[in-house]
Length: 108
Image (cartoon, rainbow, N blue to C red; front, side, top):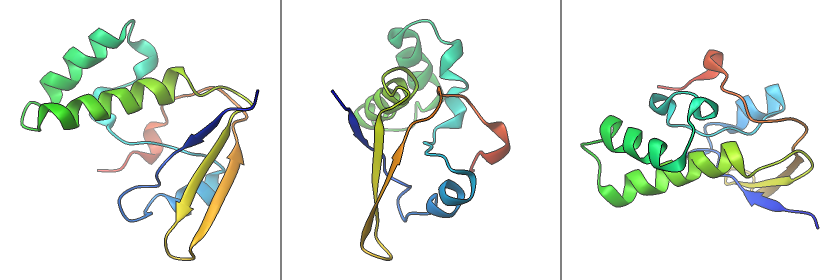
């Protein structure tokens, strides 16, 4: 069965140009580091609580869940969809590789 994932391209679609240029889908929260180096979701939750201690607990939980699912659940062959507000179009792609942390495109 084909799996589909909605991945938002930032609050104002600021990631769309990078996605198009590099042929990727990405998410934020780089302060959590590389989720592939984290052994359990509870470890990532603890890290999120520490790194984002000034943020609301619900927000921290949401961010950690997104990072965990993006790095663990999305697999090669799955479909990614996002909505491009500017053109009012949906963009669709197919995952062609495993998740990795690309430090060269981190956003501040």
